[in-house]
Length: 304
Image 1: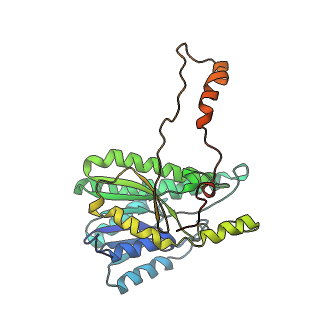
Image 2 (image 1 turned 90 degrees about the horizontal axis):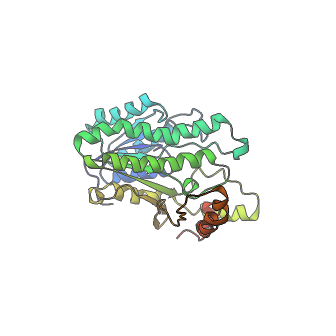
């Protein structure tokens, strides 16, 4: 890989496994010095060890790169600031933040508990805010910086049993766009990426029926390391004009997602009544309604 990120410093949250691990290694290969943040937690967020992050750092050092481990929780404001400080103390600056850390607490909505909702929001959405906010003053001061936030088609399109995860991931898109708008004057950019990859985050998908088994076999073809080259390219100086966008990466496919815009309208010069809405407005708009689709209903072809 071309050393597109020479002299850059990147902080990768959830960098010990899966997509985050692939990005951390690719960043280092591209010349960046890397802070590998990972608390080593189980998939549901319970405390674990930091071994995965240490293994990634050891691998980076073996290939001649520089990296350090951070074991803080992105859900904690103070810990988020400490991981940015760790980058500054070790490498003197920070240029890239990849918000990748995540947990799952899947449950059908009518059975989802408050802690199951709050914990997922805390890591994915609040965690992305915490780390981004910690880096923001440094990005502003140096007049440059790049955020990449991991979203998901569970939020962009939909999925069963993931109200907490879907809400967090769609919230991340709004957060990324707001950061892009607020920080553009300082030369800072922010984009969202929906990674398609077989990792432990989706290893818990049921595979009991023939349809489910077929879907799981398709998902197993999605290689997490295939996401990394796009993220590296997105963080390079040559992509400094790319901000406020939503992308997807699925093996060898790269997607640009649409963003909400009005697609149909209904107008009544005298103002609407409830009956008028039923008789006229809804029939006029109905042709543009979206169905209750899931990600698998939209991405129906095998990964390329």
